Picture 1: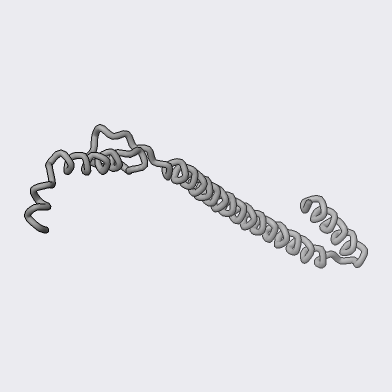
Picture 2: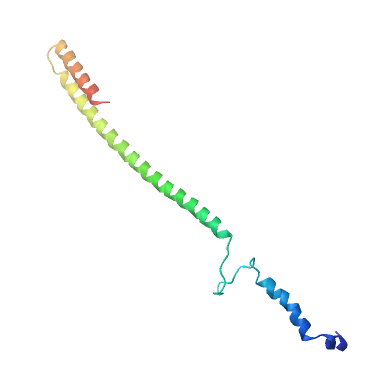
Length: 123
């Protein structure tokens, strides 16, 4: 720069040139600094984050409830299967005792009785 140009440059022009930048920097679209206590945050992303976190929380809760329901269902099925095996074992033992009868008619009557008992026990 030439010396004549420096002399024509005044501080008032410099202050006027900086003023619009200051106003522009404090526009509402500017995100506030974390240490700026006077500013109020106007985040448009927070409702999206809240909505997303709600969906994620609901999905996690649904997953936990589904896992607990599956655990209960599996335990219930295993208990019922064990009970059914025990009943079938008892029915087979009763049927095998029927064959100890002396006559064929007594064996058939005993087997029909065991079968009727087994049909009444099972749904």
